[in-house]
Length: 433
Image (cartoon, rainbow, N blue to C red; front, side, top):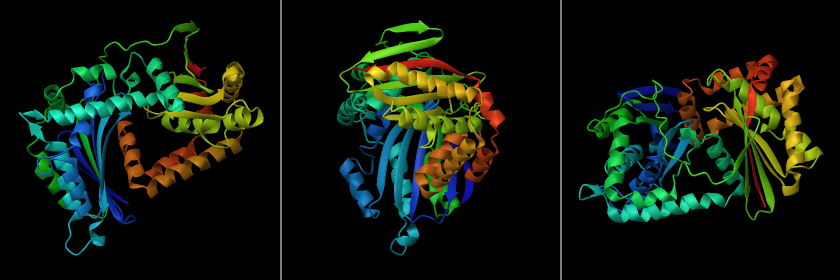
C-alpha cells in the first residue's frame, strides 16, 4: 500500500492510502475538536443533522437515491472520543471506478456528495432546518438513553466517567439529555460553524485512485471554507474546561482508589477495575503496555481468562483493555453478584504476579503472536486501516503496520515489568443487583 499525505490548507489534510486489494473506495472525514462539557451534546447532534440533507439533495430520500445511483454506495455519520478530543465523522464506501460502467466517475460523485453533506447542509432562515434539528434531537435522546441497555458497556463507560470526572475524557461521547432542550436550529448551526473554523480536519481516501485528482476535487469545496485554525492539537492546547457533571453514586475512599457501587435489577454483576500509569509517556508506553495487557487479559490464553474464568470459574467474561491516549488500563468482568470480593482478589493476584515477573517467555511470545495477527488483520478492512491511522496520528506517530509489528516484537520482559510496576489502581466500579 502506498501512503501519501497532502495538505490542503492549515489544519486540513488528505491522507491517500492507495491499494488495489479492494474493489471499493472508502472515504472517511473526521473533524477533531475540543472535547468539553459545554459543546459535547451539540457536537454529537451535528452529524445527525448533516446527514439529513444538502442543498443539492435536501432530504434523506434524495441522498439515498443518489447513493443507489452510485451502484449502491453507503454513507454513515457518527461521533467518537479519542483521548481528550472529539471526532465528528463522515464515512462513505463505493465501488471502485474500474468496476463500474465505462466512464463512470463514482469516486468523484462520492467526493462531491460527502463534501456537500459536510459543507453545504440544508439551511432555513440562515440556520439549520428546524424540523431536522428537532427530529434528530429525539434520535440523540434515544441514543443517550439506550446506553444502559448493554450492561457491560454501561459499566465500562460509567467507570470512565467517574475516574475522569474532572477531565474531558470522562464525558459521554453522545452528550447529555439535559442539554437537548437548550439546543435549537440557530445555536446548533453556530456551533457547526465554530467546528468548521477551528477543528483539525483529516480526510482519508483508501482504494485505487489518482491522488492529485482527489485532492483537486476536495480543494474545490474547501477553498472557500472560513477557517481560523491555530494548530491547537499539535501544540497540546486542548481545552480542559468542564462544567459540572452530575454525581449519581455515593463514593468512598479506600487508599487512593474511588469505589463506586451501583444497584440495578441485574442478574449478572459487572466489575470494572481502572488502573492508571504513573509517569505516563503516550508514545513510549504504547508498545510495552499493549503487550502487558495482552498477557494479562487480552487473549483467550491470557492470565485472567485461564486463571480467573477457566480454573476458578469466577467470571463469565473477563478481559483487560489498554486506553493508549490516557495511559489507563481497565479490567472488565461479568461475575456472579456474590463473587465480587473473590473475583477481585484473584484479579489482584494476577496483576501482582505481573509486577513480580511471574510470567514466562512463552506467555510473552503467545501475546505477541496474537497481537501481530490482530494488527495484520487491519489490512483486510479499509475502515480498520483508517481507524488505526487516525489513532496513530493522535499519538504523534505515523508508523505503518510493519513498523508497529516490528516494535511489538522488540518489547522485552524488562519493559513489561517497568509498566507493570507503574500501574496503580484508581477506580473500582461494581454494578450489582
